Image (cartoon, rainbow, N blue to C red):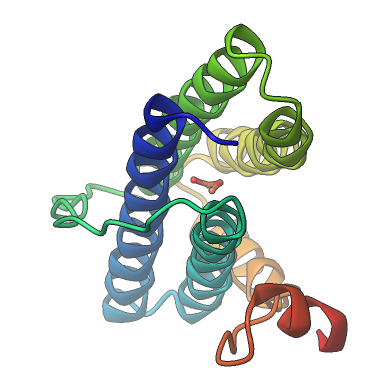
Length: 180
Ligand code: OFO
């Protein structure tokens, strides 16, 4: 039986994941606008990842008898000054998301909510991976500095990313994950 406090926290987290998706969708649009098509692809894949994160929580909350209550999604980030700036903001955002994921895990531990602890474990692991990936991209971008050729090479490299998560949730997240 999931507590009221946990229901509220999970609903907040669904909103944060949707906000993440919105941020990355905006970054994808910005990259396409400045002719960095590979980066646009990378951020669109990231958008799909975040939608999957939100939908997993949506389905979990329902499976626990909790009501999903959606709220307004905050405006995405804007005013980027360079690709490095975009990825530094991505890293900052992922660090913020890690704090929130850890907060949910802390709450699940405090409430002795074993089911949510097991569920949130996936997100703890996912955040380690997300921060690591973005850290590496930030490091590479710092390394190349103003080298435009190297920037285009990185853009090409990032453009090879494909979404590895399900994107059609009409039959539910679990069913979608089986066919992805
Ligand atoms: Fe949902 O992991 Fe990024 O934000």
